[in-house]
Amino acid sequence: MKNALIAATLSTMALAGAPAARSESITVSVAGSAASVLADPKNFTGSVVVDMLLPTSLSTPASSALVSFAPGARTAWHSHPLGQMLIVTAGKGWVHQEGQERQEIRQGETVWIPAGMKHWHGATAQNAMSHYAITYIKDGKNAEWMELVSDEQYQN
Amino acid sequence: MKNALIAATLSTMALAGAPAARSESITVSVAGSAASVLADPKNFTGSVVVDMLLPTSLSTPASSALVSFAPGARTAWHSHPLGQMLIVTAGKGWVHQEGQERQEIRQGETVWIPAGMKHWHGATAQNAMSHYAITYIKDGKNAEWMELVSDEQYQN
Image (tube, rainbow over all chains, first blue to last red; front, side, top):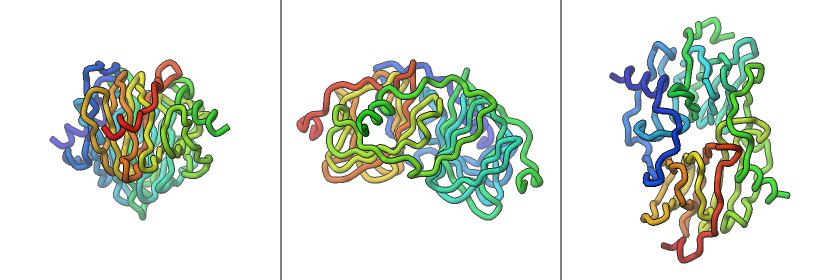
């Protein structure tokens, strides 16, 4: 159930940003109003907790979540059809673009991952890391998931 | 100069989300790497400081900024062509949709403002408030600015 939910929310989320009707109201979503979910082990390695920032019933141009990685935890290799922004809210992590050097990311830093770029991100081996993830949706999809990141790839 | 910059970044920002080329790299932007700017008094009342989260040279589907309002400070009335998400990072503020009751927003809450909705947001009269603002861009614009919020409107 949790995996099904997170697969639905992270991988193939909501319908893409049709402008909302003017009759809708402003939504104020309180942290903790929806249950945290464990990320799907098909697309993540290690302990990863996801808190959606807005009700998934809303139609928005991007999905938005707080994602918390335990030490050693990371996404699988993946790409985003319209790119993704990460705002690191705590800890220290790594982001790794295929064919490049792994980069360290820390609290207070903002990361832009361009469209179509194969990469992964997660905590460092010794430190937890949390980030907001704003992931733009194209034709109802916000990510293309690929193979898991091996321990060798993770350690560089 | 500051006003010109903030007008450019907040009002008529960047070109809308054409998918970036695959040859681009991941950008890691360190907090404080660009100067903070004071928001344009044409569109804001009181002391409002804006820190862009990513270099304005990047083409992204939304603008992204940390916006810090002193007590009593607020935006003008405005709307967004594709909507806006606010993540309240500190303090206590108000968001006010035209024709509705003013709502209080606090640290840890996320706000969704649908497309085309006339509203304002800012600090409360007694407390500062900071939020991330993710503002989706349509045809190169992310906001339509209207009249300032009078003291009477602000106090309800």
